[in-house]
Length: 384
Image (cartoon, rainbow, N blue to C red; front, side):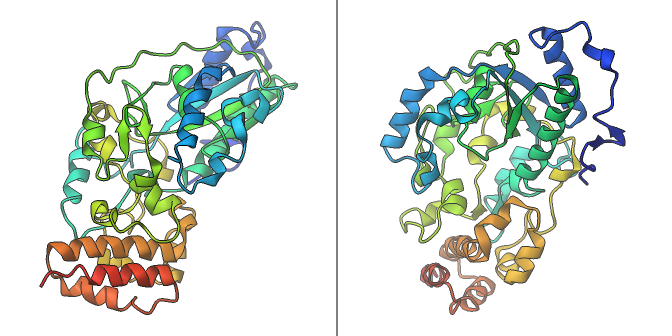
């Protein structure tokens, strides 16, 4: 349940003593401590403060785009270098408050140490569907955006002249770069942010503000010589440390990429139907991953370890109902079926399953040409 706007656990977040910071200016470290306290009350795990000069990150961004690693994500090129220039994206920005929020489903994780081995086991059951852990609860965009707004409004109540804008994976923002500079962690070789106390199982959000807040210090990189994330990637999308070819990434293929999935990559996708967690599952730092403190990220029925046959049977109405308020809904029912068809083809290649074959045949005349194509491909994988 999400609290009513402006409230948290029954306490109006806009009501607090004016004397809280009466001896502090926005430039003091007391402000950072106070923001952390408010953020914790709203379910965030940690905050950091970054400056807005990301000049030295621009060459790598331009090179990544020039090589076409962004695939069909054309929005990556639409804002030029504003992605690396916060003060151009939001004029007047002097500091960026970065925040992270843990998302491991609270009830389904017996202990933070055992979640990864259990997830890896499901990847070995081809008849089961695998949805990325982050997507099994409520849409994180909605959860974080609301709470970022509440935090910013609470700051504004103390500083009436504060201007701000909140982001969470929703605009041209170099989230990991900002989070790394502010000390929330370091960029792992899989390009995700890693934290010594929480691994990588958390969401990131930002508040751009027109205040020059004291910056928090970055932390050192602790990946060492480990290449587990690079070695495990099913499609070898991680070309080297910090270099990801999104066009080969299963998360990109199942979520961002519409249309036909390249046939050469389909067998490598296994039973992953929405996203992929492999690089995180094998990361040694994720033995420290933390449960979510908010119920929003509890695993929804049907989005955990359902069978492919069960999910292929969802009508569009059922899909929309079960994914209401979920990040999954944005891909639409047809793409959902396309992804499941690929997983079913991979299961059939490992052994003839009449239930999977019949489920595919029921979709063979689907109105979507893309669905029909992938269903026919899947049926052709049957090993007699």
